[in-house]
Length: 162
Ligand SMILES: [Zn+2]
Ligand SMILES: [Zn+2]
Image 1 (cartoon, protein in one colour):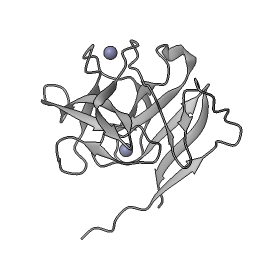
Image 2: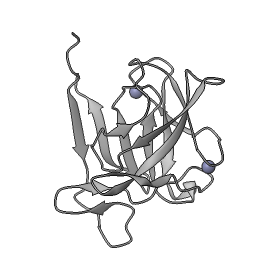
Image 3: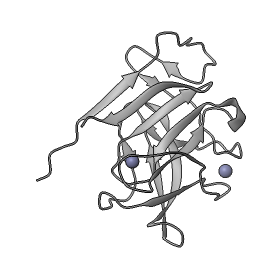
């Protein structure tokens, strides 16, 4: 049995200004994203699947990359929550992450450290990617490493503690 990975969530929220319209929302103990978009401004929220009462983020994937089987994942919008619905795949499977509406592949943001050549792909906190609010999702199934940035500043990061 492999050791479970130790995950740590870093937060850099001291100066974050939560308002009724901020791109991150907060209740007593959770922070979540109320809406996220592809680089073409399509909302990825799905109201038929909820995590903790909040709509899920729908990302369409091609399993194994270009030409692969098409599947949908529904991700928890709650920061630090690994919850997701979707096919069960072997850990380490590469996924081509795409927008379910325009079918374009999500943009590469930064390399991920989990596999050579792996990237974290972007979903945006506003319909305009130029506003520099983004969530970086790793394209490797089972990799928990992700981050949230806004106005170019890192505000959350989930990393494997090694
Ligand atoms: Zn789109
Ligand atoms: Zn990764």
